[in-house]
Image 1 (cartoon, rainbow, N blue to C red):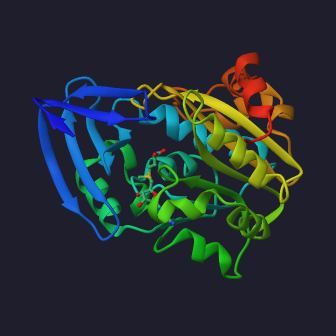
Image 2 (cartoon, rainbow, N blue to C red; image 1 turned 90 degrees about the vertical axis):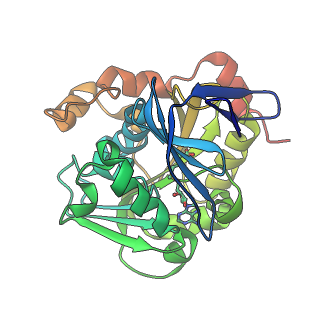
Length: 285
Ligand code: SAM
């Protein structure tokens, strides 16, 4: 919603964030959603889908580094990665910092990829041009349903559970994703706000549990998301992210010039504050 030169991103019923913007750079109604790209003094270019901030030049590193690196540093030797959603290319760019053979990105809306390559090159860099990148425009749910190659890590960079993304939060999708993993495989999903979507996080954990012996939630501060404190949840077939030695993480990320993710930060992110741990470990209503 545009009033004056401000955008308002309504998070839950009772929480919202507002950002001053200076220009609407691009707008289109795609077959799936309302896509807008604004310029803003504080966070640079901002991508919104259906009025919700997805990513900005000013803070994308926090979300994208914390979605990609914890799992990629937990897997003993990742080579094949699947990204579902993530059409802005930010998590793709982070994943490609690892010595991977191939990254398959399945985005349902080609317009998001196109607009991001045109207006958000500071976020996707040359990730879409990388020889290891396989871009598939299509539904990620249908993609994992099909039999096919197995992946070491699957990263789900989706919006909130609505529209085409709703099915990316259910147990059937997680079970199929688990079948597309190699034995040491890990699945990571954005699981919503740790402030106003705790019910969603509980549900995601409950939906992962039948398919993954190990389920762990961790947090990240995303300055442009309502309430700031956001969450990811990992489903792991056997490798525990909490068990990775800081020295091993330091070795894996050496030379990557990261702005948020660190060996100590990895462990701190999984060490949930008691108020949150109690909330998340409670049974979903
Ligand atoms: N980081 C953002 C967030 O947390 O809200 C998400 C950013 S990324 C742009 C989300 C992408 O997921 C969108 O481009 C959307 O088109 C895509 N998406 C939604 N449902 C999908 C599906 N079923 N399969 C593949 N991509 C999907």
